[in-house]
Amino acid sequence: MPAQDVTPITEHSYVPLSAGATVSQYDDVWLVIPAYNEGQVIADVVEGARKTFPNIVVVDDGSTDDSAEHIATTGAHLVRHPVNLGQGAALQTGLKYALAQPGARYFATFDADGQHQTKDVETMVGVLRRDEADVVLGSRFIEQNGQVPWIKQVVLRTAAAVSPTARKLKLTDAHNGLRVLSRKAAEQLNITMNGMAHASELVGFLAGSDLRVTEVPVDILYTEYSRSKGQSLINGVNIIFDISLRERGRR
Amino acid sequence: MKYFWIQLVLIVGSVSMALVFIRTWSQAKNRAWKRIAFSLFVVVNVYAVLRPTDVTWLAHQLGVGRGTDLVLYVMVLAMGFLTLNTFLRFRSLEKKITDLARTVAINEGMRHNDERLSTEPGAEAAVTADADSDSVKA
Image (cartoon, rainbow over all chains, first blue to last red; front, side, top):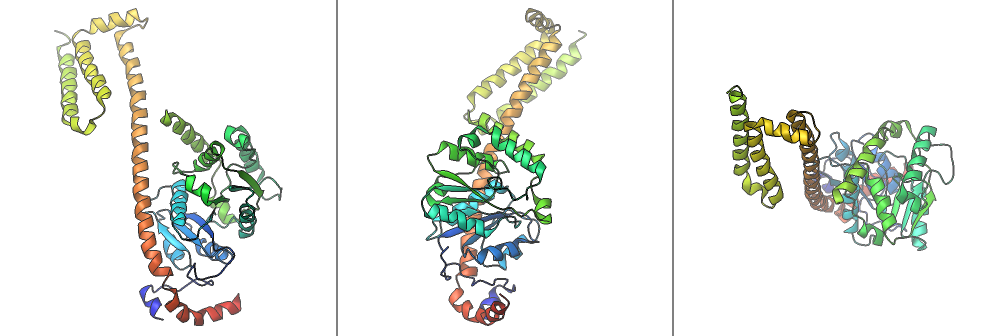
């Protein structure tokens, strides 16, 4: 195995490594996965997604664990932030990378902890392909499946209800990490909030743009792992601070 | 002369602050207003130290009890301004670091991924043997 001499890591991939080589109906879709210290699960999540989507870029956001080594065993493209910058920054980096890839037309943001499902992305890409929207956001609340813990439901619904921008777009869930953007939308998007406030920033950007935005119901798997990694509710306070200070900084 | 020592300490403090400020002059080129404000601050500082009764007089005019209280209030304002200023500075710094790190990450990523992923035609044949056993499982 001459190729293995260069990188003496056991290949983890069940899908052919070269992204472009596979002929798939989703060749023009790029999955952007921001990962920070997700070494435990990242390889499985990536390979699971690669069964459907051959093109994946994982942004390792300066992880201190062995995330990068795990990602390197998969067939996904790996981009490494030299220092930890935050999820918003990682998403923007991933989008920028994916935009530079030939033939990329749709861009999906996907969580590294395995709570999102590729069948939802397929549905969302379908909406874009039929040219019914420029941006499709996943929502946990359009159709109930009882998966969302009730306290989180209350907080997230309140967040969506009190956010003027989310109201303008009639969104039911402003903080879902699963989104699919058309090329047009991805090129316009510029996430400047490095931390977790990027979700609100993104909704604000969409409300101020002339892009057509729609929501699609998605299922979230709240596994033990994603629960332990997920945003704590108290982090909402940080998000409110970040956003309000951003508004001040502009003036 | 009972205020001599405290006056000395405060004036020496003001002057050395001004000296430090002048030394870093060129680093803050286009911040003329901040410089003017700072110079004013030093002058007022020296004046207030030499004639504390004038500050008390001003405090009375403004309805504040003592001169010390007035100084305290001004301090609080200055503090707030400084905090905000520092915050905005950090933000712009953070943005620069982000842009820098992003450029590095993407350049490095492109190079590595080209090596790692697109050497496929050669590697494909080698991997096929492994892939066969894998595909049975899948």
